[in-house]
Length: 365
Image (tube, rainbow, N blue to C red; front, side, top):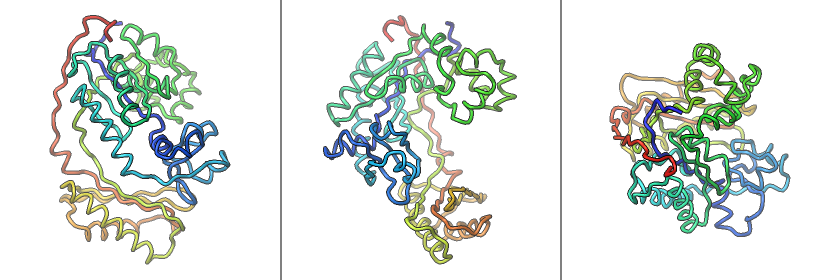
């Protein structure tokens, strides 16, 4: 296979059922049991243990549905301070090998180890060492994917979960992608996968038969992405300085809200929390979005964008009230959220220099 892009050695590290695994590690009584982090009486599941996943419990699932699927499910309140603490330890391990680390969340990150601090030629060996160190220092397991770009590494990390790793060698990419089910392609969601099925697209080789023009017509801008990735083309670099594009706060309520005074109190509280977060990180933004989720789970969002930056808690609250008045329904509310975007961080973009070094031998991959 000829590569129309620079060959790199990229690792995607993904912790296994991270929040749930932390809870099981810290509380031995929960080990081997079906648990869900979050949820409870009115919430949604933030994370599920592998024991719970066997019953169909998934993150973002309403707790009522999760309990129906798994009657013996144990709900555990989240401890985000603890998850962040462990996440910092894990990232310190990453930085022992490379400074080109792009965190995606608390529990996963991309690493570019084309050149690394330990001069280890094999990316596969680096991934094994990182996973072993994570286990020794935290007691938790991680899975990893290794390949020439971020897309392939991300797909690979899911193949041998939990506590495994998969390398897609440069000379195996074409055959691997042709046999990969389209629902396993990173970036193809359930709706898109079902649309592809109706078009007779079940594997990469089916997707590959479609021309760029056909895919763009069928899937819009995403069509170009699908055309490229099925050919192993993904040129996005590992970005160690990700630009924050929005800051959000939201609350799911134990009891549905309907009273106007209650809504005012919650919007005021969210405005104060949002302002505090922004001040702490010296962030300003020009676009405020109100998110409302109703009792029936229908969702409404509306934004206001200004020429100048929002600058005070009072501004957030007054604007949130205006957005609230634009709501289409007078129905009980189960969630409220505020988010700020068009941030000043976008004006401070940092350019990360990516080393582009060809491989001498694929077997060192």
